[in-house]
Image 1 (cartoon, helix red, strand yellow):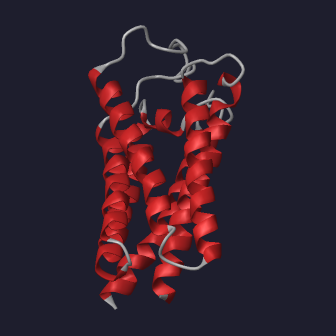
Image 2 (spheres, one colour):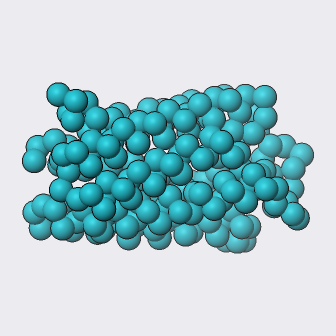
Image 3 (cartoon, helix red, strand yellow):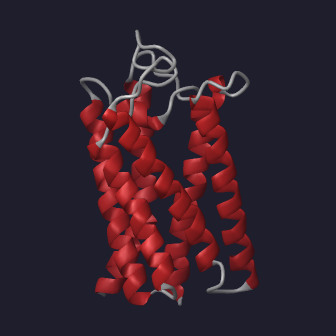
Length: 203
């Protein structure tokens, strides 16, 4: 029963995180979901809502990683999901710098990044790489269809996250859709984790 509860965390974390940032983004004046990153919702007077969202997502993901370690087919894969969880927690500890003109009155990109902004970017990058690797590691733990889905998810997640990163670095052709690309990328990640939870529970 404990293992099932831990693995179930992988089912609920993605929808909870998504509903929270969509709700908060809709309530913020001047926030443009197509352009602005999710992390910028943690800046300002209402930033505590997205900070809490990062912490909840991180703790649920960490519980899921423990479940994968106890019941899953790959300890390496479980460790990689644990790194993803730590990345989520770090998003709450180290807020991002203003990006693409949000909050209002800030430049599209700061001339000099703050220490917390650098740490946010560093932990986020490590988390993204870890989750991509986890997709490939877990690909070998099931049917051919599962393997194809996992590899495709890893490739698409990495590709879309790279495009989102370029957009937030103010790549001219991407900057106005950076937030949209990031949301597609994060949705790919959360969906794969949920399917992984179902896959492991069935096994």
